[in-house]
Image (cartoon, rainbow, N blue to C red; front, side, top):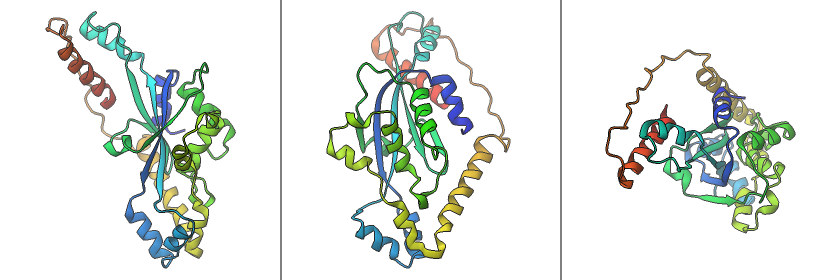
Length: 252
């Protein structure tokens, strides 16, 4: 498991999941053009044959209860917002490796589909991921040539956690259905292995950099100033400070 994922799960893994949404964004043109070039245009021909107007990257946007938020706010603001129950949105996806982080691009929050939770069956991040990873033997592996990619990753998480029967919206089911990546990659013929070589290399670089095998210069710790003396009794000022604090925590 990547260090960044483990770190977030250690701090937020037992928080209650409030909402799960399927994110669905088109893959950028450049990688597709390269694949089409390597396949002598057979990639696009196969894409049209299979009825895929676009190739999409799927991921999950998971809204969790953030019980740590009020503690920080109470420390900074006193008793002004003791009743606040903040939430945090995390993005769970698989590219070269699985990743769990905060959404950063506005488009990631636009084309989304609700995945209804099962009533009276609490679900946490740790439970969601552990159940799926224990059943899906390819949970941590990426190989588009074997249909083991972002779309199957997302579908398996939803299916293994028993959430598939909750989905009644046909558009959501359509967006959730994986494409036949194996058929598309096979159009590269003897060059098919290039895709796996590139993604494997990307995974190794990601591991070297983000698992801290390459040491990066540490930034100076942030200092917070207590705001008890400030006039934060009006709701507008309190909301602004509250949102600023949450943003600082995300960027920490």
